[in-house]
Length: 197
Image 1 (cartoon, helix red, strand yellow):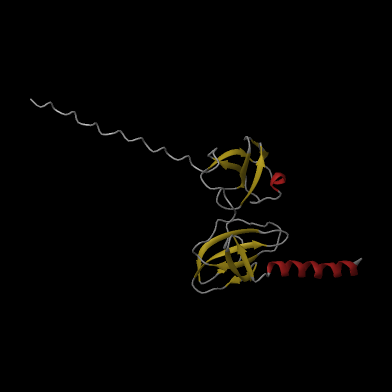
Image 2 (cartoon, one colour):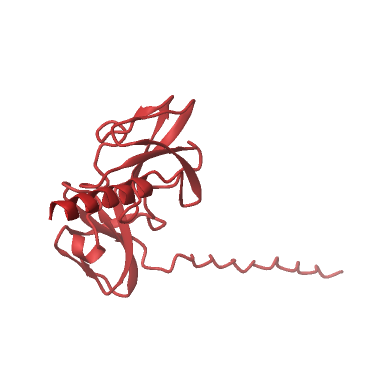
């Protein structure tokens, strides 16, 4: 049994470090460069945004910054929350301009539809954002006719240790505004001719 355990741990460790040591990470079209394993210094020159998280078993991350001339790749320093509780994390750095939100958020304003473990009720098909906030550490999935606002419904805990909620888009339209009708111009009245004497 000891031999089997000794054989499994190096394989599991190699799989984790390979996934986390990915040299480049692209999130919503922005490419980030690997800079450190968890608890090491993420070194770069200038100002950068830093991704803190893991790519295995799935992409779980938080994007923070901007930081100048490096940052410690440690929970509580590079990120206020742990985006992948229980998993070994890494850091990647990237540009400060054009940095996307950590997770997709529907366009327009969002309204809270339920607290964690309550039912978020709506009609039709809508994107539902679940997490500790609408701007970070959340996940967005599409559901039809409501969903229970829970880790199991969304497939993960996007903000471990934080009470979560669900939000849906405030607008009930498809997102394409109805054009304002062009007013019909009032014709200029034709002057009445004056009679000649």
